[in-house]
Length: 395
Image (cartoon, rainbow, N blue to C red; front, top):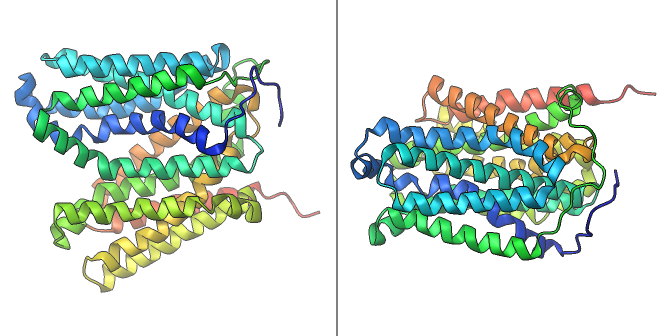
């Protein structure tokens, strides 16, 4: 679908990625870089561990749900003001967090930080949809954004620990604030408005009643949830059971992100050859193959790099192949309300990953590969069933 833009977006793919990626990364980094200091925060703020845990849970919740609000707003007022306003709120709350000494104020500032992050995410991915819909570059930029983001959980806690050890916990939020100011300044000069000149009336029903939207959103949830469950179980398996050190674990964990980065370089070629539905189907097949190998490792091998990480490399390939097309598949029919559709796409995927992924980890236990096997098997098979239902009748 083609429609007029307020201003032509002429950046090359690398330049567009450098402009967009910081907002995607910072939203996640504010969560992961904070993890190493969680144990010291109750004493620092004179509160209980439960309150500090609340700052983690609420950040994740607001990050997902807030996008429902900012999606329609970006369709009405534009991507640029939502992005710049969200980035400014994120930066301001980060600096205020660095100076906070009160637990209630700290919780409120973390909520505001999440609100700002959710606004920037909506504006970023709505812009991607505006600019690259129907173009081969869309698969590349979606997969590259996802692959770059996969480094954050691997490197964020290490960076946070190093900063806190040398400069104290407040320096973590100062660093986040400074990085966001740099990204905000860059966007203020270079981020052009891409919202369609004419937008449709905001309506949720056409989106929520679209089978392709649900199938491809489910595929995105499958892919992202696989990484979430891996992230949740890997420390207990590789450190506690396989005996790797913390540093060795960090490097092993990073290899999964490296596989995703390398695979992303070929995503455009895959999509051009297999198409959107074919790429999602093959991505789900790779996830299922990895799940089968994980199950084999649990049954017949000891916890190790071979039994747990090598199958995850295969799953990582499937994640990239799937996420290269899920946004286009889910949002293709909603070009004139892309902000709303992106918001629902991201929020629903976050809810599925959060609830279903946590359910499998809690139900089965996080010290084995079985939660990952269970989550991938259930969600990938559901996605493949949905793809089958989307097939047009022969003739």
